[in-house]
Image (cartoon, rainbow, N blue to C red; front, side, top):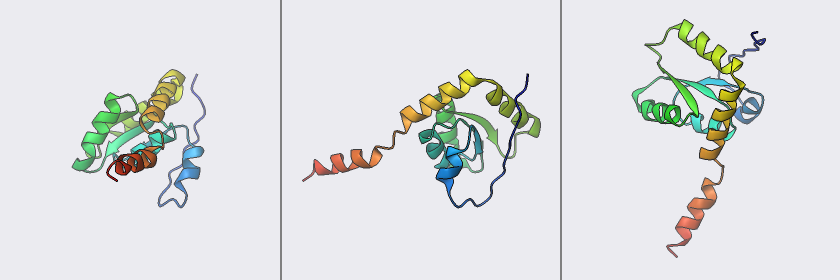
Amino acid sequence: EEKDLKIRVIKSPENMANLYLESDIAISAGGSSCYELAYFGIPNIIITLADNQLNIAHELDKQKISTYLGTKNEIEIEQLKNKVKELINNDSLRKTMSQNGKKLVDGKGKERIVRFMERFN
């Protein structure tokens, strides 16, 4: 049984945090937004737009935080549809990806940097 889909394509959003809180999964490029999605525990499908995103995409895929589908020039729409359906219909996979993302990005980076810098005083 397939679940009902509510899909929104958002261009130039004003408040990403609110969008993250409303999202079950996301499709994103392989940039810093992947870390924001990880912090919020949102499983995402990465489609890289530039070569500098490849390392992030591969590493997050390896850690089962995101799924790297490929570059924008090499994927087919059917692949994307199938991956979205797989995530939507696999609660266990989404839960694993969400937990792994939250472990990677805990939101305490600022405090760790301050503690590190204080050691030099």
